[in-house]
Each structure stands twice: as C-alpha cells, then as structure tokens.
Image 1 (tube, rainbow, N blue to C red):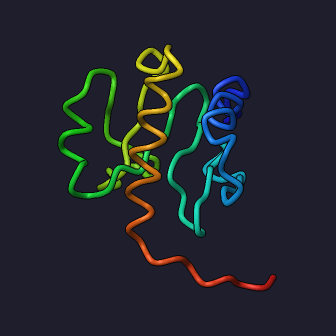
Image 2 (cartoon, helix red, strand yellow):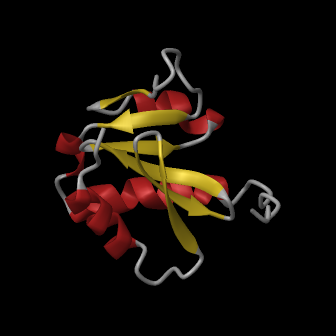
Length: 114
C-alpha cells in the first residue's frame, strides 16, 4: 500500500527543527524514527502513532482512532489515526509530539552495521 506523500510532508514540516529523525519504508508505508524507534508512520492516508502502553486506552477513546492491527491482532501501544482527525497542522503536531515524547523514554537501539 502506498502512503500519502502530503501527510508525510506535513510530518516532515512538523519535525523541521529536528536533525535526529530518520525515515524508513516499512509496513508498506513510511515510518519516522528517533533513536532507532518508530514513533509515527504513514500508511495510506492513516497515521500510525506509537503512544505507548500507558497512553493506549486514552488514545483509543479519542475520535477517529482505532487499534493498530496491521498483523491481524492489535499492537498494544500503537494506534491508527484517521486522516479526518488530522485536518489541522496542530492536530498532527500534537500526535507527533506525543509519540516523540514516548519514544524518548526508551533506550536507544544499538546501531547495526549492514
């Protein structure tokens, strides 16, 4: 599945000041990474958001948010956010910032030479 380049560009613009973010194609879409951890991604026109286990229930209670079930079973700590919930740049920025804050609590992944 392709990803919405417009949403990807909006995420890039939100992260404009950050130089420690990388992008990687995964899940058939585009993932944004910090310290080796995916924190948001774009799959079609849907945002994949890594909110973490403690914020999972609250995220699911928000409008136009559902379980991320990419593999056929829900991935706890990850949600899909429909594009209708991301019309404003501030709404998208809020999700990106929340997800960045969560992955900042995780230890950096070791660098693997390929």
